[in-house]
Image (cartoon, rainbow, N blue to C red):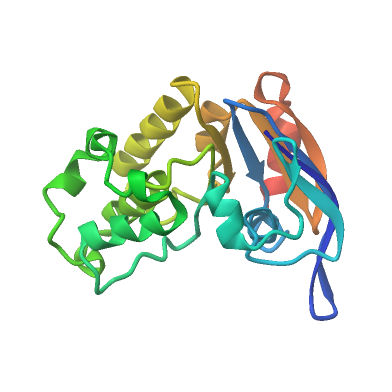
Length: 231
């Protein structure tokens, strides 16, 4: 589904990513793990087109998307749920969902019924402002807004951050359901090890801007991975 090949990324003179490579399998859940500040979010921003890279390339399906702007990547089926959710606090839940229309053809500019099957709470809050929702409800809204674009690849940056345990379970259920349906691939960044271990099929661990370990979850040596996650 996605191949990141030896990418470098800089913020001014500071190098955030150092020849990072990552393969994301179709119809699977890939999780990128690592401590704060090791380049996880920079990697996602490079993939979705929010940050340009200095070297390497990014291939989505059979297409080299390295130089495509973010909106063109969204139109090709890449949706991003950023860290901190970034919903529009003064817009209603319904209006927030409709902002996803920008990435789809006119014929698809409606909110799928599936959204409310996955997140029933949003149906009852369509007229409420996004900023009035709890953190967990805002996270559900952010994921739902991404799903309005009918993505083939859903990219999530720390979906459990600041979320109560019951909502974390709901989000885990939704992610698993989306992949099990067979038409979506998930790439997520996570610090909560147990969430990643129980959910993902494939993992990659980052440290100091590099991928230092990767493989299938079934083959993971937990003690080795936890060593990279402790401060």
